[in-house]
Amino acid sequence: MIAGAFCTAMFVSAAAGGDVTLELDGAQVVCDAPPVIVEGRALVPVRALFEAMDGAVDPNVKWDPVLRRVDLSYVGTSVTLVIGQKVALVNGQEKSMEVPAEIRPGDRTFIPVRFVAEALGFFVDWDPDRRTVLVNSPEESEFEFTSVESIEFVAEDGMFRASVGYTGAQPDYRTAAYEEPDRFVVDVSNARIRMDAYEGGSMEIPGANAAFERI
Image 1 (cartoon, one colour):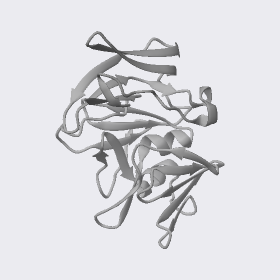
Image 2 (cartoon, one colour; image 1 turned 90 degrees about the horizontal axis):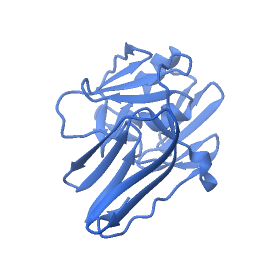
Image 3 (cartoon, rainbow, N blue to C red; image 1 turned 45 degrees about the vertical axis):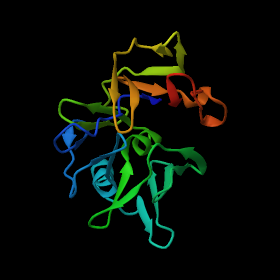
Image 4 (cartoon, helix red, strand yellow; image 1 turned 120 degrees about the vertical axis):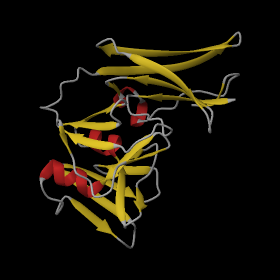
């Protein structure tokens, strides 16, 4: 059995070599510790990202050492992350993440960049050739995003297929299979999942069939 995964241009193979870099509006962000890939997701140092976005960390980043919680704010949007927890608060509403925030060597707080940046209104993409996370302000973004409306994985007659319903620009996509753990990935470039199309702002994709253990 394998696990099926759907992503919007930010599922990254951890097997690829070389450091990961971060760019904001086309300029490289200097990080005191390089971004990392955890379970196929990019995590970046919170201070480096917010210094590049706003020129200052305080008062936009607050750390509670007792609760191990980081409170982020930017242009009227607040995001609260607790180290090791996959549930965040965005303007007070619970949202699920694929990977949690982490404390890494040097007592640096790393955050899942796609989740946080998109919650704050930025656009995020991944350049696999340069292993670079691309973050763009709304007014700077050159991408024409595809809106993903539905996702379905189907197994039949020993074969399986992934059906993606979308509106907007016809997307480019790629598929890949990885091991340890076994998983099949559908990577759709410049796409965003329309969470408002799902009740409660969250989604579950039925899996558990002859091809997929979970999705």
